[in-house]
Image 1 (cartoon, each protein chain N blue to C red):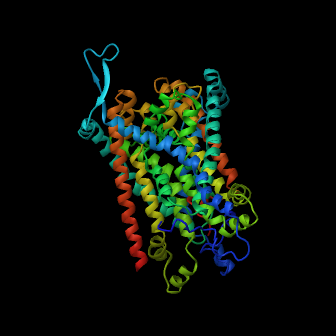
Image 2 (tube, helix red, strand yellow):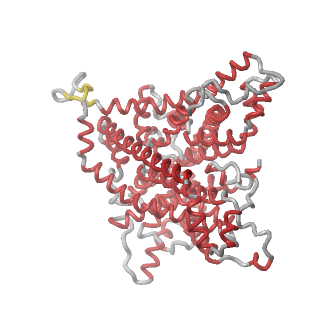
Image 3 (cartoon, rainbow over the protein chains, first blue to last red):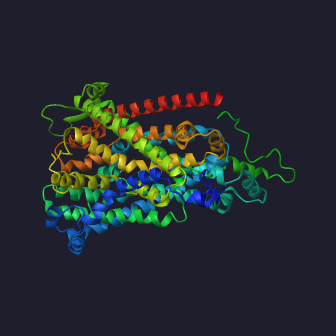
Length: 297
Length: 324
């Protein structure tokens, strides 16, 4: 896919210019961006340093001076309530991984149907699905909770998984990618060869949509991993908590006992890792631009 | 779309050699509906039904007879608009709306201003280290709002904060970042930190879609980079700016996670700081789901009216631009 190649075609390609001019650095933009990067990295740098401090060092030494308690903090955190922290991590991975996978499938079906076929009610259906973006999550989550309570499903894994499968933004992205990546004549050629609609979708269109679908998966993975409100409303059993909710309850308890602060900080430090690592790994073969629905440059 | 329903995109009309068989055509006609079954089902169950239920609840109330003890003492009855008049005259809800308005007036301009600035800088010539800075500025997107609020919350906390440390060493007064006016800045900062990177990417993508020839002409006319940025780049990415503005406003109105997370660290964030926190508090703290449902419906209506008004205005502007 051309959209996966690193973009070099910007106005600043500068191929025609001499090497001497090209080597000069634009100071103001570079420094502005470095300042921005510093601002964005500051809290992350802080949590990395703070997680190495023991409880007493946290309040006595300079903020960005590393401490000596990392190993103790890690073992304290793992020992906290029989390792419930790692259970939260596992739960988050489950909610986000499975949820994003299902969400990507649903988005792929819908996006493909909306992009490739013309049928009665297509635009209406699309607009109705998109309107879901506008609904404030609390406003959905409270009646969702009440309805799931009637089905006796609250405080279960399903209560957090099911409401997050349909992602209006995912459908929107999948439609854009399908429209750009699946040419109409390819679909038609499949029909000429006598392939069924499902076969055309799964064998021909799906591979073409793959880069876009990776984006939908990532987007939804991040959205579910970062979601706090839905589990906050749905769950009461902390064995089923995702990491966001777990850390929040830890902080809530820690508010009165500063001894728990180091646990919260170490927990936050470890919670930052998975998604940051995911992005660092994936950006080698995936462009951030895809996230905003850019399909070609 | 006004396209005739029978016109199919797979070109039945023009194929010179083989036509798909009639049954294949039938299948092709019904296929989109099959593909859309999962999404429609989920939409009905987890969007339409809950919204309908919330609206229904908002017109009901619980009537307590006698002391409210025993079976049948509490029954659900029709309430008419009672919950709505209650919500509209609720000073806490109004206060929350004003607080969020003030918060939004800081967050949206600052966040989008920074996003636009960074995007323009990334797009300028001879700028260095962009792979690093671009990723670093985007990084907060990958950090959960709760964790972001938690990290900043600790950085605001006087005992831990580096800002307090530096101010202390310089002998300057140290403001309480978690109270009064600074609290708005503290909360806004968390949102700006978390949202700038994503918006920057959206605007930057739009900037790179501008063909290079557009700049050549300007450069031949002797335009400076600043003039190019102001006169060409910003007007050309206006649609992305409109889109990011729209989504930022919606996200701002719905603020919940960050103030909720800061709550354990300070007494200045009440349980009803933002309208959505008030809805949550009424539904689960006070157990009055009917009042909560009415407030929720009002907030949803306000969001919808705002969104459609905004989209219509944006559309009209686009059409004018296109007509020129």
